[in-house]
Image 1: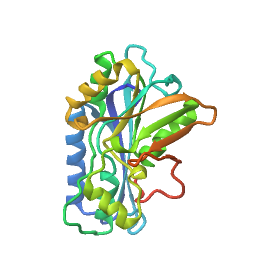
Image 2: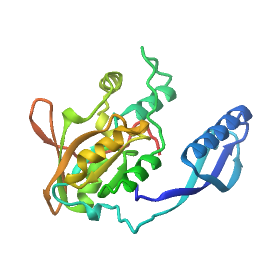
Image 3: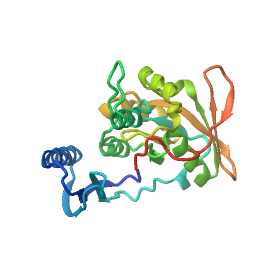
Length: 255
């Protein structure tokens, strides 16, 4: 999300005694597939085994190394008044998929995680000379927390349109049942981009050309500078409310 081209990865495993070998093989093979898809190499790692019932199965810790080319500076400090905010796809699927798996919840339809690599679409935007001021992946705290973090760091007021934010009907239904707000649910394959107004439509077309962001939408803009930072959302019926940071513990716990 800083525009780096990823190259290498470390993988550390903390495995509980008695963890099934078949499950470990499945995880390692999945890591291999993901690395091949992203074009990165696992170059170092470590494995530790802990006593049974002391490790919750398995913990995986990674760190990446990449190169930022062309002296680009993608960060909240670069955000300007008038910037357009793009969202790469529908939100909330990952958190709900994790919750359903952990709690053995059964629904009429299977909700699949939105987990996906984002490096290729980001590189494509950079190569096409889109003036990107800020990028943020929507993991812990979801869309709302990401927007609030940027608003606070950049000292800006952001306004977004609820009608432009896509949420699958099945995700909406589960969130209503469990009392979650999709705007705060974690994602693993979604990001927002703050781009110069003149580049917004071209950036949207580029995002539509990639599988991981083919449902991208423009969801709002930076309205003005504001010392304390503020995010507001215009509802489907036209009312405007303040969108706060996530308060309390994120559920389900992701990272």
